[in-house]
Image 1 (cartoon, rainbow, N blue to C red):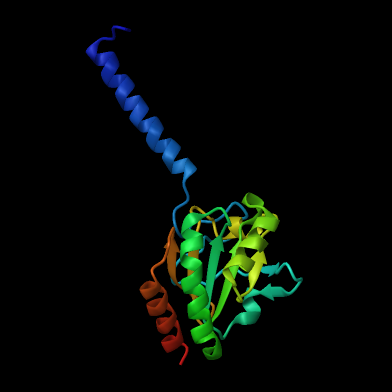
Image 2 (tube, rainbow, N blue to C red):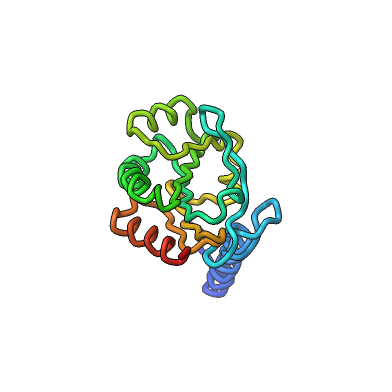
Length: 186
């Protein structure tokens, strides 16, 4: 064991504390900061960053073209247990509120998943909302994905109203958020 004087131990402790704080400050992104591409970080009360992705069938969806509709953007992966748990509730909600304009954009984080597994997952669960493939990770980076799943509730004007990190989301939370989005749109 190294024998350090009390003064040296105190100096070393302060140095490590300061170094740790600097490391944390440099390594994290505060909400409202910017992504690595200089785009504002997605947060409640701000415009949802625009993107265009395609489904496995080749249909293309652009977020800004869906303005006027309440939207749930859900970033997920086929290997994610909480994703598997919350998807049936999302499907049920989609079916219930689709006629009111509600849409779910299920963005598969394909760069950290397997394309075939993601398609199989969606088919197995009978998901009928758009399954979008984020093959190069652009949307995951744009939305600064920190946890899978992550959900963004976007109002009819394209403004993020709620961000939910992790999951699974309870059906009651989903219903409340979607009904709030529908009320705001009227």
